[in-house]
Length: 330
Image (spheres, rainbow, N blue to C red):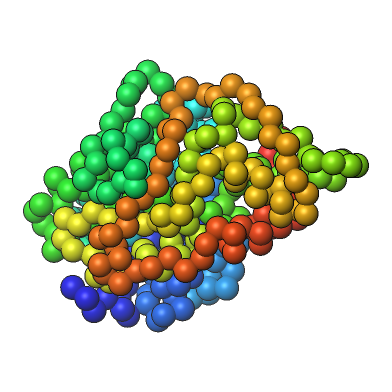
């Protein structure tokens, strides 16, 4: 299963942040790529360097006929189409679940209809909610604390995607494997995430600030922790899984460099050469208090993250500061 270069890949969600990063790398190494996306949150601009080298199909992952046509003639499907962004979890949970569950079922059905026997599926670290151990390995139980909280529409959709992938994948496939990204960041990742939000707010606060530490408000106590992985490292890890992942394999992709949200806020403000005076506000229900991946399994396949947060963050903060006029109004 190790020789997977120069194949024909279908990447669903291929104009999204993570999907486009993968597509660019697959094309660069000589693979043939078909991209399937409706550009609801994605953009073909992310593929500007390779758009003439890919087969782009505009379509909705919920449309079974479109997905089935997209799978024709491909060797492997990498399913990444989903609705991400915390704001959407709370505001449009029905859409999040509809895209997630119908999309996964359609991809499984399309692979079977077209004889595609290799499937790699994107899940999420959100499936754990509050893991019993941190750093967390892939054996930790998945959980939904309260199905009435729309926050869990995303995690629930990802859990169901894994159940569908692994159980349907027991027959008719040579390989099905799942990866769980942990807080990937980079330029043009969208606006509904903590680093873009902090970057935009910090740039405005610093601009209007005259002297002394910059007052910066965050949700909660600031003690929540996350472990962020730069998109370049994430893509390295995903390619390792695409090339070497085992049938029924489950892999974390992340960087086990844990940081509190309070310290992240200080680091973002510090990218503008200022100190931050952190102020606290109420925290929305359902937020995970601590998250950091154990990546032993992926390391065993040869992966190692190369970009510490202090190295990768400044250019991302700069990108969002420069593009802040494009941020949606809250």
